[in-house]
Length: 543
Image (cartoon, rainbow, N blue to C red):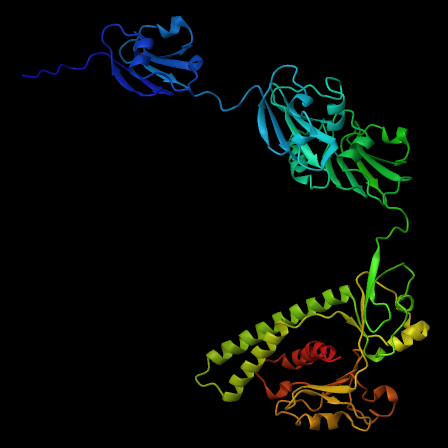
């Protein structure tokens, strides 16, 4: 016979314990016995914050605080129904220093009283290459309210004068933040400023200052204790080469007792030691101007048939004719009417126009396809029209923006006032060799380049290319001159002047007749613009 009696007095333990459970007491057990039954406390347990839940003699539930590091509490006798709870230690870390920013290894170090910056950063080898030795920060949280304050120091001075005022004494939970000399420092600084702004109030403005203009890193920086204009310039990485030392502006905004906004502006001479040692206030804004008439080095590229091709820097008042003269002028093989002058801002403008044309044509093709999909039968010519439109779109997607500016180089070199071309950075002039051909492209049977003959007109060249296709628009044929200009040969005075005659390097363009393909209403405009840009690029390639 196996007899299992009823359970005796029970106690429970939970929380940071190895085997939390209900346990049966044998006799008069203590807290120490219960810990032994349950395998002991975990390393994360906080014994000083243990609690005992008990039902007293009045049948009321009560809670007792226990400190299990004391003999009196750990040897306390337990009663039936008691429950012990062991809490977890707080996640915060005490007695540490953090190091972050432009360092080889971000880490957490132990803090001890009297610890200084030089004890943590014993040499610049601890930092990444090219550190900023004139500006570093200490993030400090005061106890018990944990209010953020920011302090700055120079790591170069801290290492040079160790155990001095230049080598700050660190406090528990301080964080050292270092910066690179040439890297972006905004990520760390922005976080600091945002935290400072959260602490601001009506009576306490946000502890921040701003610097703009000709410094390496313009932006908003924490206002540290006794911060001067010089300190702010160091925080911003110093002045750039074009900074104007004679006149910087310091703007200050304050709120008076009547809560009126009061603004003050004064001029600071950055070369004056006493001026840059003036202290800053919250929300001050420093603006560093540029040297008058300062300009970055600007360049133009000359290629092709000039005596000394290459990249030439130019001054503000230089013209295209001046640079050509510096390059020794044109060679004897140069073909001035075919010169191609390109400019970066025009290229960006043309690229935007091409993107807009592409979007419009894509939308129009999509509409046409929807209409075609709703038709039971699709006419062969309409199907062909959709194919033509898609082909045009595919070509448009691969058409580069040239950024070409049409010029008459012969008049430029001659020095005519109306043809004095000022220069912009990135301009490029290409002068091809003398050509003896005329090119026919577009809706002809065989687009080809042909030998130039003085007595032939544009129609003769079209006939020599096999004539027009059935999709050609014979009323809108135009000529792209070698210099990039466009002329229409549809008037009786086409050959009335020498300027209108065909010349070597010219291109005859036969555009698509959009009226014959009615699926896309915008094709006429599209095709005309497309041939002028895309086929114009082909014309340039023939030079």
